[in-house]
Length: 324
Image (spheres, rainbow, N blue to C red):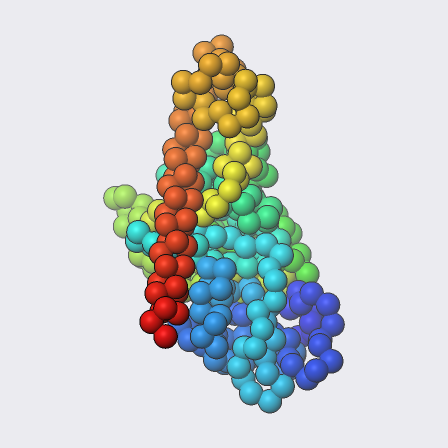
């Protein structure tokens, strides 16, 4: 038995008999949810299948008073979104209503550009980002990244940093773990949850890449702590950027951009660009500007495709109405 407070549910239960619940895992047209009476498998009405990137692990929902059917998905406080796979210009919700997102990256596979993408996606969704450097026992050069986000060096093998990591998941908090495949995320999550090490898949020693040990997104309770959403490793992350959120993870670029002559400066060839001047003066790393430009171009493409998709759907609707 759990309480609404332990579920993180926002407010009291409704007085119309509907039952508050939290989504623990998603399976096409049904979801596993946690309620104060225990776990329930509930079906999804069709209108919820594509709402705001789809129903996600961590969503707060209301079940019917007598039927195990999701009748309402409550507004999200935060959400971690990425662009859906393929050419579709639409969001996919990875985790909802999380307070903190831990980006796990291996000490032997450090990639700043990839990390920046995660930080942009987290900032866009409104959660707090923290960086977890794993596999410190392998002896690779470890550079903490507190300049980008609060960071922690860990090793599931030696136990280094794990007590501090647990302390960062207190009761009442919901966190999500994200990262690429093979970075040691599953090993850390297994230790935090007290699960057997054999649940972790084998990692090939020659390149450090691992099989997907987490096959779906799922909500867990950390013993003595808060709630944890585990996610499969991502080969590539394309943040969903419907607006101008790129600047949220590029404070250094944004601080110089505030002095650009034009408010919508793309920092390419516009006159009076303070960002390019900062690069020329050595006050801003050119790699940071190039990373900003790449994400800004992706955002522009997403916006264009989204507008085109909206127009196409509107045209189809008018044609259907005309046909009737």
